[in-house]
Length: 155
Image 1 (cartoon, rainbow, N blue to C red):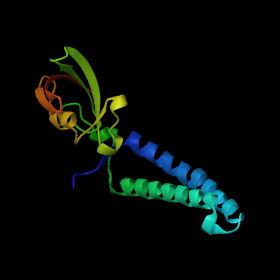
Image 2: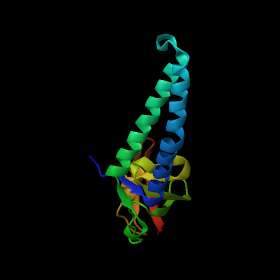
Image 3: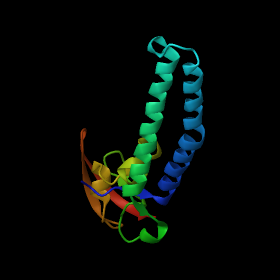
Image 4: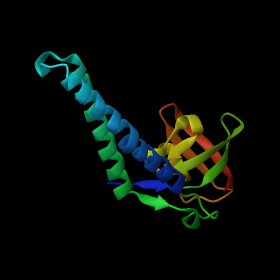
């Protein structure tokens, strides 16, 4: 199993989500269960069934986040270097096929977000960029074919 990485920023987001689930969502669901139980016969109580399902979803997410935080290696700013690309770096590349620059942040898989150009260290782009230096050229194998990129900046 690959090592699980999370940036300090990602850790803070996960911790905030965990606080919300434990302090807001869990009590809301428990209140829904209490109200639904008061309706009587649980065997034909759709409100109770819905609340139990919601409780299951919330508890599963809580467990998942706790497990992630327990297992993940936290990438703090002092662990991020500017010499080579690693988890936590932003990288500006020149895509020779599209003749344009793109900037990516290399993150662990749990933080990847294509909308923000956050690429996982386990993705084709992330793996191709890891341990490379400014000026290095990489070829990324994607489902759409090979893409050539040159690293312009690491920050």
